[in-house]
Structure formats: C-alpha cells, structure tokens
Image (cartoon, rainbow, N blue to C red; front, side, top):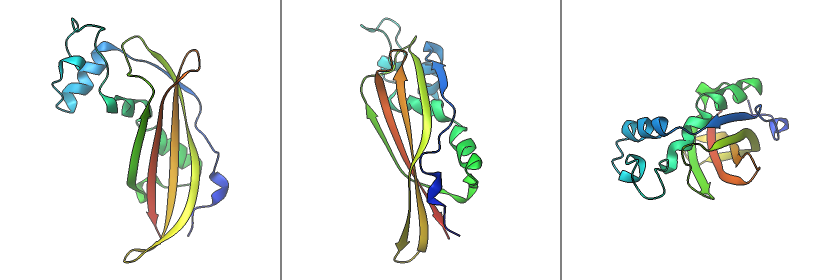
Length: 143
C-alpha cells in the first residue's frame, strides 16, 4: 500500500522549547562529546549546544505526526538527515518549531522493490521568528 500524497503539508502543532545549559551538558555527555564549547561555562561567549542538539526538539513528535497522518512509524526506516544552521543554539534561547510533511513520493530500488519516501521538515525559529535551523529527515517505507 502506498502512502497517500494528500498528507503533504500536514504539520504538528507548534512547540516551544527553552534551551538550558544543563540540558546541553547532558546531551554532550550522552553523545560522548568533550569539546569545552559544550561544557565550560567560562568559555568566551558562553557554551553552545552541539550541532545535533536539535534532536531533542523533535524527540517523539515525528512519530505522533506520522500517527496523525495514518502512518505506522515503526514501519519506516531512517534514510537521510540534514540540518541547515543559521546560528548555534545557546542557553536561554527560546525556540519555536513545527514539523511538517513536505514530500511523499514512490521509488523503486533495484533489489528492494517499490517503496515510499516521506520527507519531514522542522523549521526552528527564535521568538522574533528569525530562522535558526531547518532540519530535513527522509524516511523509507518498503511495500
């Protein structure tokens, strides 16, 4: 069964998150990152979040969006991940973000046969609605 293209444009509710220094340090520890930019409160300009910290923004929320679109997230494989950074995330940043389905297409693999490709995009802005990050993830569903 193919994924219905009518879900293109469907989006999650808007979420808000405040970046906290302690969470940055916990995330850095969890990924084994020892760069002082993520740990040392005395580093000039203050600490910044590791580039992949934005994963915490969407944790569990993509699966909810898929469920709301009638998709079983457990049947999809992660295919690709891309993050465009406008600036680093810092403690005290208040971010707004929304996850949207931006593309659905069918493809055929040489060995895997027919599959659906679903692309989700998360736009992360600050409170002034200035773009901070754009995150795109591609998921694959084999028929």
